[in-house]
Length: 465
Image (tube, rainbow, N blue to C red; front, side, top):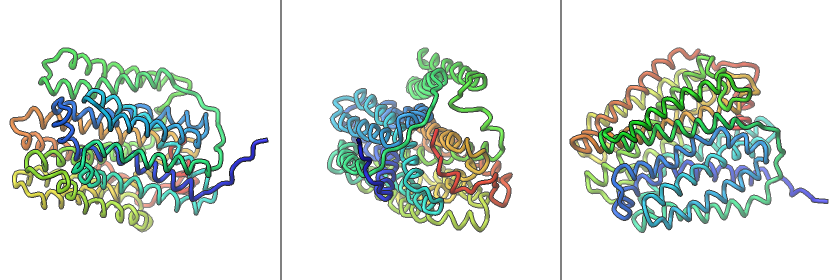
């Protein structure tokens, strides 16, 4: 007879928060190290884009199916497998002898992150059955991800000062520590789940083809027929994906989720906000080092104020939502992102690191106060049984927004007359979706919409599917 280990809720919370912190950190920690990676491994701007997008594309494309897998094998087992895979691929990244090897290992990291994210939320749901305690735990979990998104460039700067490979090697002791804590987490229940194999394959094909076509096509000014063909494949793949989701018996992204207006607002807001933030970190990291000649450490320090703002902004978003409902913080957050993009485009020629750091803070404020209510908006706009898949779709849209931003921004920066010109055009383009999302968000009702369950109760299944 096997005796189950006693449950330790705080251990489950610690592992889940560390996992969310780590998977989010690895999206942006590499940005400051990109210049050093390029000097060491070569490959040009397109290779550097793939170092980032190899991770985010795999993360986005596999996230929905990974949630179903976590349900089938249990969240604790899925978390353990994800941590092991993340640790192994981190070793491979740290030892990468070439740019292509590093990109492949980064894709493996993204697949591991896709498995970890839904499992981390599920472990919190299982460890805290009381809705009040669970809401507090989810707040800690969310803050961990938000801080890592802003602090990634800062950590990357300090590690790159020694060796860029440390931005990946630092993951290894963290993964080992999390694995050491796993036995103190109670076994997770298993649930029946069905995989949308056709939908998953089409999602991977469409997203990879789209990003490949943008990055490689941009590198050749779209003179490469293979890159142009990839864009055609992406369009056809997307159309086929929508058709499968509309007609399939068990779609991975039910189209019925898009019917509520508030869900559409949240998806556009998440896509635009994260795209603007990822693109900002990508471009400013390279600009500060390659154009202004700053060291990785100094360039990373430019993101320190933004990291502090992200921490306190996320913790303070709850009272804003309670007092004003979701409309005010969502519109304000997206407006901040828009203003930051316009200011960056206007002031970049001044070559002021202090000014850049200040504008990054404005962008961080936008994400800190705008993203939490967007998540709550999704969860409060769907039926309780769809809360998991709805949240997973939101996270998928966010990752896609980041991947496309890096692809497009990189193309513009590398093909324009100068890097600075391409970066300014990129920021102007980024301001368009954030502004449109802010205007669309004005249609959010003033009081928080409710459909029979509180946001905390719905958040318990945030990435279940």
